[in-house]
Length: 324
Image 1 (cartoon, rainbow, N blue to C red):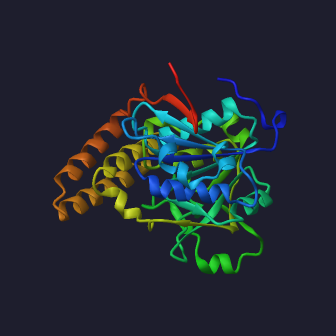
Image 2 (tube, rainbow, N blue to C red):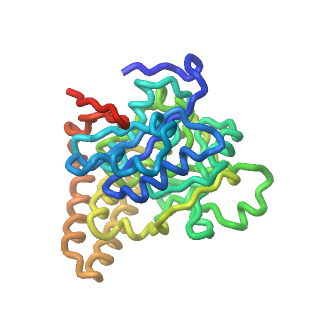
Image 3 (cartoon, rainbow, N blue to C red):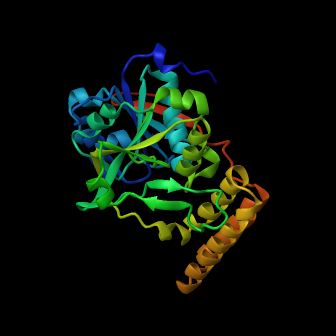
């Protein structure tokens, strides 16, 4: 599919929010977007719940009449996860709007009032807001990343800290990767390097896109004055437990196959072993089976079926339509 270059487009901003059965948090997220000092042209809600109620219907009471005209809901035919949700949402902005910028986030992410303004001030092609949780820095962006280093278990050499922000000389830091939580992309980024991989479903989908962006020559920045608050604390070890463990292990295998080399396969063996121990200590047999299945599928290159990852309904408040 051919997308228009941002040089042919206006200067509008399209926000993409992926949600799944959290209407109260979604309403708060959408309201914080609409209250920004810089207006978004459109807010695209990607509803990953095909059987539940309309997301728009659940949040309509929180919006004014003018705000309602800028919010669109895309109903997905299945739970597409964060990877599939962001792919569909970004593609919709590219196909149906003239927005030159795309701002992504989850439904538990609340940007402060001048967050978008500070992101735009950076004038970078990929720039992420700095995340906080209950007033404390909760940023996991890596300053340096050595993904192909066979001697590192964690490819992140350094992550952003309070001290680093305090002593930073400018308003932004150059980082090695981004999250889909609050990152602003120039339209050209996706027209050149493509969309997120829906096959990932969840876990490492943002890391894969970060590595791809590096391959295309893009630099990634963290805007220090662009602040946003998370509803939940980041728990990196938590993805190795329970149902997420399957996707974390499987998708990491994909990254090693594509961006690494044979010398770092030992890393996934160590991570898988740690995940097995973690699940066993909690007597989580389902999680244990998921990790083993994830490792096996990752080694064999088997990934999620994306045939049903498509938009089946587009809705606006007072107007909706089914898609064939």
